Length: 269
Image (cartoon, rainbow, N blue to C red; front, side, top):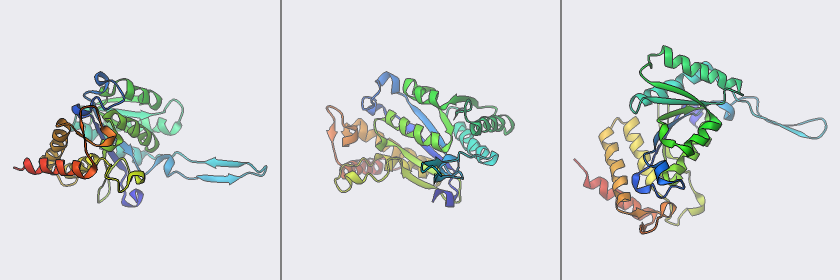
């Protein structure tokens, strides 16, 4: 669907609410203040490259192939999304690749560097980081990152790792942009194992709505209201099961949704 709609840029904000610093599996002093944005290329790379598949060899064994492919225009457009996003944040971009091993990401690094230099982004800081080091640095010092831009597969993996910095994958929104329409969805998926049990965390859905208000509807103040409502409810000590902590009040999906809705309604005007 994202390929048909031309949704080549996936934005995944990773922001730790202060009230959830103890819910993370990392120490408070490591994760507190984490606020980064993963910009993942979404319609290219190894998930879409050709040839791919499994073939049977003459000796009876099988051979599996997936092809990692990126073209210059694909890299240019996702780099611009990351640079434009950084201008609205702390003006730092970290491009993540594996240029020491993979030729396709040698091209990635070269093109991102050129776009930064030639397309008028000189006011921004650009760093390059190998993906294995980036995975380590996300755990070691996540506050060093502002905007991270990377390939489809690396972005898939790193954004899920980053999700746990917030205490739960149930806290992460996402936006897929680039075509005539945008697609917004929580990162966590449908969670069929808890369907109908009133246990899901609805906060990522609220935060996804805030993303939609901000990026597609240009309603920044409304987005701020939604995000502040989520923060207030967390500060009051309400938690769903995935982020439950000692001395906090456990609530279900419906109750958490009602609490956030009331906070939004209470901050009108």
